[in-house]
Image (cartoon, rainbow, N blue to C red; front, top):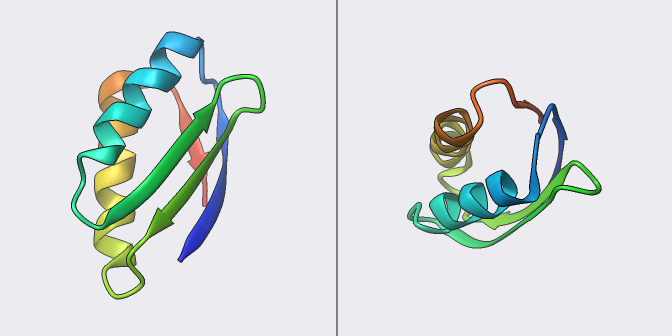
Length: 72
């Protein structure tokens, strides 16, 4: 499943890179691209575990940037 998620309050490109690295470690995530300029995350994840994976992605984002919000 391919998803494009709008992000709010992503503060810097370094945080975007850190998020990307953490999200790529999550089992079931095939690809992840976090764009600071566009305030957008593009993901490809397993269909059968999408809810579980999205919860882990939210947790990873909050760990790097607590104020960042995802619009899924």
